[in-house]
Length: 266
Image (cartoon, rainbow, N blue to C red; front, side, top):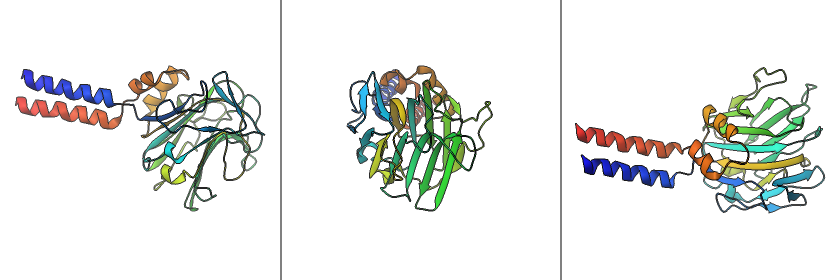
């Protein structure tokens, strides 16, 4: 029994050491456009990095990422952005954009846009193979102050979160446009042009404001995990984020190890 327990503890220890919470790339702009988790470092355009933020004013460009930032992410993922759009944006300002260089395959986020005469709303616009063309929308996020936009994809469904909860509209009502099915979405396939406040295939200008943190996970965060990471704040350490968002595969391995030990005890 002692040997079995030690074996299980060893397994748990290995898994804990190897767990990264699925956080595979992070750009916190503390000094430059480097990746503090992986090695997919970004290249600064004509914007600036100061006071722990990427600063763009609509006339300059932010950071360009290479395909390494999404290499191997062909199924589930999460994109999380902390930013302050401190004045009305107008039109289609780019918070971030992933595309294959065309207007047929892309994911574009903007803090506010005018759509069909409706009030300005934050949006995440996704198109796949020129066929699937859908947009998630929520309350405008260009009203100043720190905001967080999170998009998750579980391999079938995209979901859109604002702050630590599912997207809402002005007045606090849940947005009816907070999710949609998008089978076949492949983040690795929209990697020839990736930009943080840059590189929209439509040629849209950069966001006006500051981006403080940009995170890419290789799985879909749950609603509880999104709430937890929101509570941790923009300055959370990589270790704190990883502890709050354990890799699903890691937890499965731990569970299998425990199950194996229980079966042997019988």
